[in-house]
Length: 407
Image 1: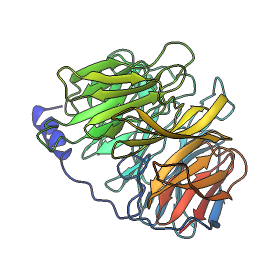
Image 2: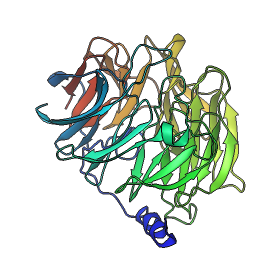
Image 3: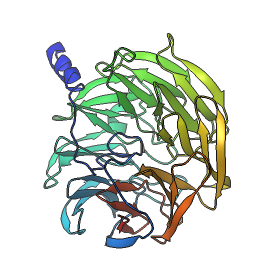
């Protein structure tokens, strides 16, 4: 690809992407941090607004305007299916063949939340298929077989790191061991723009720091891989820093990196714990390494320097919601949970979605755990990351996608 085109793509990274208030266009919402914008609700009541049947998969939905996109599997196809956000009315679907067979768990569907960007839907399948379709009608723009193209292994649970689309680029933690650990694709054509590192993939999605202030002058792509935390130049894949994070053996990195001021918080289970990283130091370095939070795959919620996180693992052991100060490492409180859960913050409240279909709503409060309401909103296993858009919590189990009105 010519230098001129690459510079044009890099420049597009700095363009602001405007989303409608209430949208949830990618994993963990508008800013990939679990914070919902402009949502007001009491939380004391919850009712089903609509529900539709869905196929296999562990991927949450993406929402833009009145379109909700579900990524799931039926038979030998991974499907992108779209519904009206207000009523659940079916709009369109587009299927892609797959032969994925899971090694450890029974579910054979996709794992990664799709991304909606610039009128397109980008989805990353469990077997490494990368798909780009039109948001309005599902028309296919392009596909890539990333595991085949870059000789990437499927990992324990198949591919599961949600893609990141910014400007004209789509960043994917592919995990190709021959200089294709992280790959940037052209949003319009699907062609490879750059590929970098020999890192295997994690299940944590990357984030981008745009670099718009003197303390953060350069855009940086932050990626948790199988065994390391990387900072890359988003324009060309140049490695800016590398810090060890992860453990060999039957372990995963699942929680995303999250900003605490101008530092980055990392967390993982399997004896790894938490790290606070000063990415502006030269070289980047750990500010502290403490087992304050060991989260299997739930990305913590950050308010200032206060962190709310789920400590523990879904597959055994005690599970707790913890509130602590990342600057001082002071634990404010710990509250035992009966089941593993994922987190969203909205309107000064914490939505705690347990994997058994129970929704707990608590105050974002450092003094104590203060529960506002408890609702059983869906039976079965609700392991997929929820979305919160236009006053509706969108959750799914093994066969149902449901919109729950909490506003």
